Amino acid sequence: MTASTNERVRKRRAAMRQAGLRSIQLWVPDTRRPSFAGEARRQSAMLRDEPQEDDVLNWVDRAADTQGWR
Image: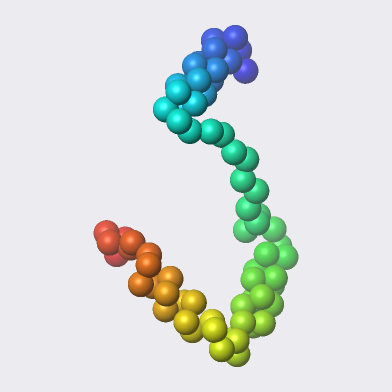
C-alpha cells in the first residue's frame, strides 16, 4: 500500500472505532477447495437422522429475515 492508501485506511479505521465498532478477523471454510463438497456432504449426512435437526431448521426458517431475497 502506498502512503496515501495507508492514511485512508488509518482514517477509516479510526472513524469506525469512533462510531463504536471494532475490527475482527473472521476465518470461514474455503468453498473452492476440492475437499469442501465432500466434507459438507459428510457433515450433513451425520445430521440426517438427528431428532433436533428439524427443530433447528424450522427455527432458522422462522428467525431468518429473507424478505426480498426471492
